Image (tube, rainbow, N blue to C red; front, side, top):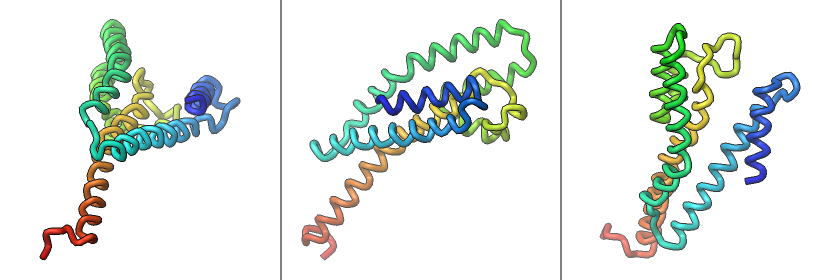
Length: 167
């Protein structure tokens, strides 16, 4: 967790002073790798100990950890956008919906957005949700992929040991 905090601090520093911390955005990559490793190890430990994964428990932990804060930010942002007289509010509200569905990264790709070219990017109060969206998409895929791999390997081992149903 300490290294993830350092990675997050590098990203914040980069956004505050990009010239002072060039490459601080690499903290996102470090954060993703560490988070993916930690989540994968947590899942593998459970899979090895029990032979299965409690997907409901896993997803309930993710919801409890992320959803309350995310909803709060999105609701306050939606209210602020509605109270403001900004042009392009429809686009901003679509970005909010995409963020709420953890699909912000795909919405930004669809819109042709380039996160790194700040002068080209349309300003959005939820632009940073691309990383949370990518993380949540990983959380959707990783446990299912591990379960499929576990069952495939278990079936292959059973077949190799002569316990298959082939003949």
